[in-house]
Amino acid sequence: MRATTIFPLPNLHSLQTELDGMFRQFPFRSDLSNRLSPRVDTQETEDAFLVAVDLPGVASDDVAINLDKGVLTVSGERKSPFGLNGDADRQSDGKFEHAFPVPDSVDTDSIDATYKDGVMTITLRKSKESQPRQIPITVA
Image (cartoon, rainbow, N blue to C red; front, side, top):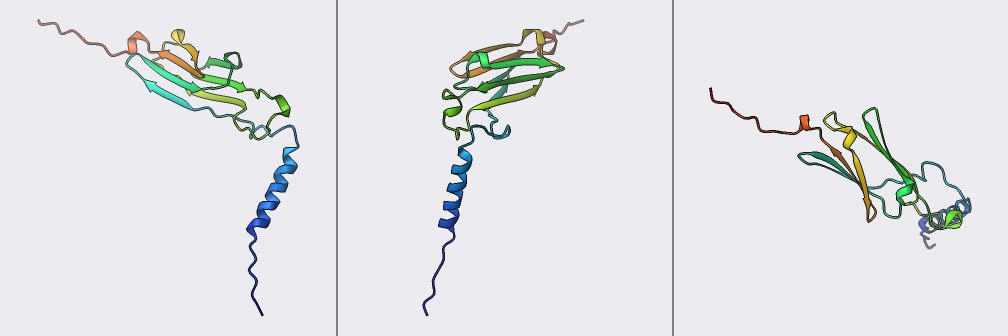
């Protein structure tokens, strides 16, 4: 009698492909799978905090920046250029939101944002009182 080896992996792959095809027909995704998480870089300089958010393909009109109770929130949505009939597997489309605590040393009236080449740069300037300064020495 001859032994036969059974490899279940090809069958599992086939099952996964069939299930993926079944669910691909739905024109919607759950809210969790439709979340976008853009890359964020932060840097502190002597006079400001800088926040850079990578948002390629996002229109500046689809981004909002809010400051509330010491928290800066950047939110928005990257929309598929194909609408609902586009590639449903694209993970880079959807809503996003990042919240950053704003240090007390920031002058909240001087926060500004610029958007260039798919990067939103937010500058949070430090108040004059919080910046380092040289203290003069008086000789008595």
